[in-house]
Amino acid sequence: MSRRGIALAVAVAVPLAAGAAYAARAQPSASGSATTEVPVGSAEVVRGTLAERAQLSGRLTYTGSYAVDHQGAPGVLTAAPAPGAVVGRGGTLFQVAGVPVRLLLGSVPAYRDLRYGMSDGADVRQLETNLAAMGHDPYHRMTVDRHFTAATAAAIRRWEASWGRPAYRRTGRLTQGSVVFLPAPLRVTALQTRVGAVAAPGSTVLTGTSTTRAVVAELDTSARGAVRVGARVEVSLPGTDPIPGRVAAVGQVATAATSDEGQEDLGATTVPVTVAIRPPRGFGLDQAPVTVEITTGVRRNVLLVPIAALLARPGGGYQVRLSGGAVTPVEPGRFDESTGRVEIVSGLTAGQSVEVPAS
Image 1 (cartoon, rainbow, N blue to C red):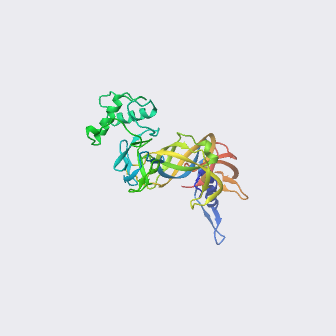
Image 2 (spheres, rainbow, N blue to C red):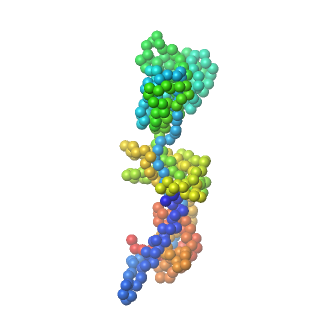
């Protein structure tokens, strides 16, 4: 099946099978002298609300993709974390010639020395935000803004003291290359420069992701307009009950859809949908296959009957058997597999009763 997994696109095939089984309610036996009756019940044709849902195939992963470059002087890479390690605010990303390069959180890359007398900038605000968050401004003398002050330098010296650096070596400044700003704590996925090799300026040392779990699913481009950021969804993870999620992003770039066997589905295109979730405690699988069920629309005040009431009509189409025994053709609309109901566009009126297989 295509990774698109749009339930609405395949739902019409389901009633055919159900109808074929139900249509055999009174078939002659092999001897031709008896019939086999299938127990039936009845269901009323009602007006109600039908949710249009799509089921998307996806995978559980981590958000973000980051490359950590060395921006300091060239030197031998002497230490680096293993894949799977998590580096948080203030933690050491790697060491070059025994000198640690540390992580701070922020969206503006480190591009200059951070020191007293520098010009104002967004990088100063990022630095001060981090220093305050790490507790290095205990007397609240530093104003978090774009201006580097003596209080900022004092906070840096307190941070240096936490490294075990003696007082005479505390400078109150951070040279370019000694810190890296990333938007989130880093979960290391790969080491791009091996320990013992030379880390040149601008070379990538690590790659990684954030520590935030998310689901990435593929949505058929034809349904893209029906899926909104912020929409609530239901996510089925392996071995657990379904959990709630929220659409965090809908991709802008379409790619060719692929089947479960990895074959390209010619003529079909999809866009990625990112769903924010909170997995159950202790659920540690990465790249686990998941199913996302999302409501793409709601149809109100429509005629509804159970899907099981539909029978395959000779020559194509559908029909239902009324409780009085008469058979009448119907035109189905949308199907809701989760509730087992189908919209009837024509052929029935509210209040009529149709036969369904007895449960």
